[in-house]
Length: 134
Image 1 (cartoon, one colour):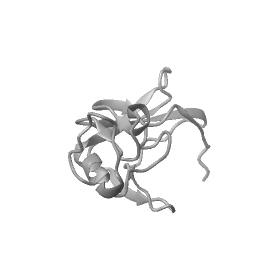
Image 2 (cartoon, one colour; image 1 turned 90 degrees about the vertical axis):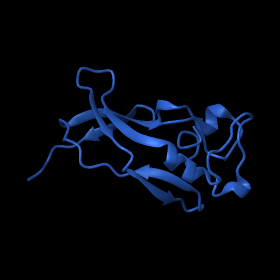
Image 3 (tube, one colour; image 1 turned 180 degrees about the vertical axis):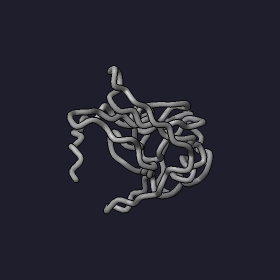
């Protein structure tokens, strides 16, 4: 998805935005349109395992971040989540949006759009939970 899997960001404004055929932006600036459609995020640890834990957050979590290349994208700032047992884990982030959203950065729906409802924004990212010291 253009909103993070292939390259983070959106078109900076409507002047440089391009979209797939048949897509009509809901607002001129792609980032504003994304925030308008954003319903929440769900963080899933250890998806598909007996240890799976899911943490949903609402529309209050997005934060605008700008890359060094001056491309805006939405990151999220969630409240603290419960700790995990030390060892290997995975994390998957899913976005929930009300309508299809295209980032304005290209014309390929697979790379540049997120469908309505919930979709995985990241893959099943591995990480290591460390033992708490102290």
